[in-house]
Length: 102
Image 1 (cartoon, one colour):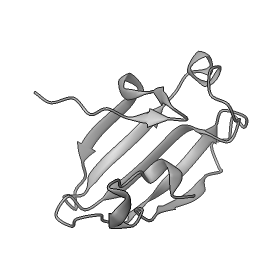
Image 2 (cartoon, rainbow, N blue to C red):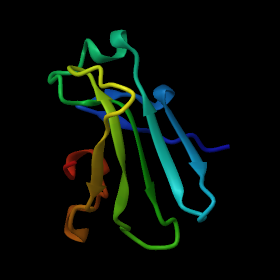
Image 3 (cartoon, rainbow, N blue to C red):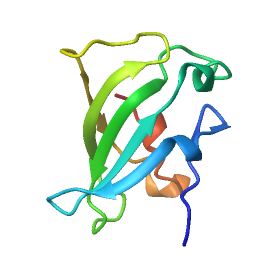
């Protein structure tokens, strides 16, 4: 079975990512980093606990989700940041949701 390869700040975080399908048939990518996973990342604003959903039926689909904590902010149970990702232009040959903003 294929395994997704996911990077964040050039670091392979594939083992900290799960991909599922939600009730609306959207693909959901969930990131769950530990404190030690955050150590090699160069900035504290990287997502530590986050999920984003996007349509698997649209090429370069936009994603929508939430960030519950970052490497520099542990978050709290009653707080989350909304996350909207817009794919890079087709000419870049990549749909890198992590560089698209939050």
